[in-house]
Image 1 (cartoon, helix red, strand yellow):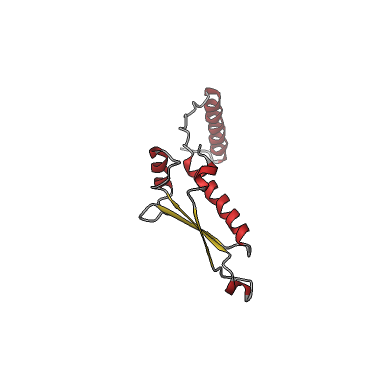
Image 2 (cartoon, one colour):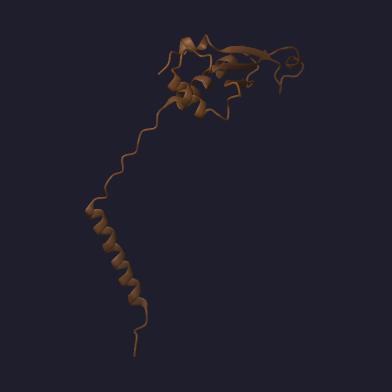
Amino acid sequence: MFDEQAILNELRFKAIRSSGAGGQHVNKTSSKIELTFDLEQSQIFSAEQKERLKINLQTRLSKDHILIMQCGESRSQFRNKAIIIQRFLELLKVNLLEEKERIPTKIPKAVIKKRLSNKRKNSEKKASRKPPQID
């Protein structure tokens, strides 16, 4: 589909201060990772793949077609970087997949016949519950 190692060279990472638990340690270390990927400047994807990604990721891309993702789950900068790379690659794989065209199947005659006979039996059962019509 695409070369994961080559795409990692196109990513830019920035370490920023993370919020949340950690006490004073959180105030002096930059453990949150911000990943940026410029889809327009990418050399990895073909024009068709870029268009598919633009359509599928339109809510996540900026006006300049830049994808920005952040991860601050762990206190470790290294761990956050590994998590965000994993998420990024998974996001690309999912959004590059082409949906298979559905081939409608024909309903077998035996199934149709069984359904109609069950309907008829059910109708007769309910009709037999009614009081007889006397004119």
